[in-house]
Image (cartoon, rainbow, N blue to C red; front, top):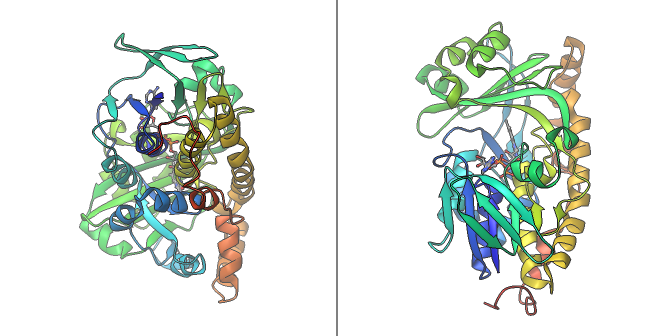
Length: 404
Ligand SMILES: Cc1cc2nc3c(=O)[nH]c(=O)nc-3n(C[C@H](O)[C@H](O)[C@H](O)COP(=O)(O)OP(=O)(O)OC[C@H]3O[C@@H](n4cnc5c(N)ncnc54)[C@H](O)[C@@H]3O)c2cc1C
């Protein structure tokens, strides 16, 4: 079986590894010229954690990851006003939570790829001819790839989705926020953050900081914006939007790299009535972005890759595998998308009153008995999405790949 994967992000790399391990021939097309270095801190737990463990990549993720004890909300003078004890939440979740930067998570997944996987950087899809028995992909360098399946793993603005399923607007649910991330060198800010994930305790707009192992600081921003259109100059927009925040924000903005090195996007969910059409499927944010408000997009990308690869390995036809993948994953995604939308007003309070309410709620969440409740609120309903498949692994005969 031959599969073309569009996008070498978290979903694309996880899928390529699983498909290759199952005996498929895999070509990955990535539009960036090289692995993307910029990124933000990801809390990695839930079904993606289970999938990473089943796929054997978890030890490397844990090695590259961080154990963050606390998310501290600090005022304009740097005083801690409230906090979320992430360490206690992690323990309530059985210790199965690690914080890892997006580039490091991609690195762990990329390192697992065998030399058989044909990864082509600086390439994208120019044309798709989707048939009942196969798909023809024309790459932007003129190469033509005939495959059994094309999987769009190319993020919320997926080109595969636009080519095969229709215009972007139809699938994007804008959540009224813009977000950005960048990293910078500043020993004084690194020391001020001091092993915590620090967020400004501010309404309408907030910045977050984490000191990385290499001495750099990862910064993250989120602000309310009625218009989903992105600014032409991201760095200038950040200086404009966050210039009035106190504490370490001005130093971070001063050190902000040029726009090309800043991650900047709208916060949105992807709502697609179907995740496949003919021999083209969607995976990860391209199919079902839950947004940073839900905090499990990376986890669901890795879990979805695991489920799709396993279904292709077990099912008698591509159609059956795609249907099984979607029906297993969709309920989990809907649950997470709803939780993300519900949590929006607490994630970034719109008023000072709501900010004070959040402080009070966080103080209550600090009580010992609240740990399990907080774990469920953040992680959602426990799901056996991956563990059941992993437990039944030997049962793969009769699938679309040669047995391994
Ligand atoms: C600030 C922030 C914080 C977050 N925090 C968390 C968290 O704590 N926990 C969590 O689980 N998730 C979190 N997420 C969500 C998570 O990052 C995403 O859900 C995840 O990255 C989705 O992975 P993906 O591979 O589907 O898409 P992406 O990461 O968007 O990767 C898509 C890939 O496709 C490539 N590509 C795009 N277009 C094309 C094209 N036309 N042709 C070829 N290649 C293309 C891109 O260059 C990229 O490599 C957060 C997101 C943000 C923005």
